[in-house]
Image (tube, rainbow, N blue to C red; front, side, top):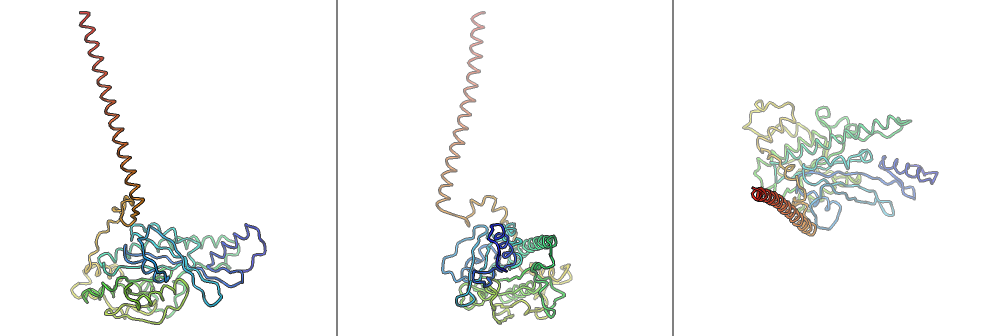
Length: 379
């Protein structure tokens, strides 16, 4: 970005806004600094925060995510060079708070946005539902913001010189496997299967179904896929490589592992439908499933093996103050005291009302007795 020739507040603000939209700004020395955005979402209690802290080299205990939380990471490219910045948003609550995707996914961040979906491999009966709802909500918001940004560019003078809105579908190479058969996610997507240490104890047939299904989904969206566990240093090192590739543009490594007997490590573009094969279920008649498309077929087969549990998260969170995920002992104690005082006030008001009603009835009775006594005296 060229140096700002005027020091008026308005022009400085306009220059800053322009640099943020492009995702690149300059330090005082003229070195370009990259700013990227990463949106992290996934299964409730699936280890999102723990994985993020490890990827950022932060030695601190993880805490439950409160709705939507922001943090950032910085990384220097070399000695005495400016540090690139990664703006990181983490969505908590599983699928129950999916409406909050509209906060981090905006026109300012859309050009440099990447999405990380963390799925709990130890809970396969919640996996597809979580994945489907979160990806649908995120994709809808990305496409909405992209359309808004494109319309804004067209309305600007000289819009043809503006940087186009980032879209992974425009950057796929011509030799990308199954390029005409997939539906790339609109921004770079990384799918992480967490708690591999528990997953590896599953029956081999179940592991195969889960692994091949996630391979299909990842390839269908032109996404990268990796299985990991915070208890494995080697797996976390590979996971950190994928994360740093999205957050800072670093090399993610060349390791590829597609065997269901090992942790999957599959960079985008390293798999294909021919290698994945058909759904690994022999006792299911594919024609009886009445699938509309390949993705729907994999979904029906997966749900036949792992019936999806009905998610009642929305109903459970009618009163978030009672959700143990957001517990704060001091605040909860004060809230309990306030509720008790409120209940006492309500009880006092009710008692006063009842006393008033009783007094009113008593007065009416006394009035009737007085009138009757007066009439008897006259008689």
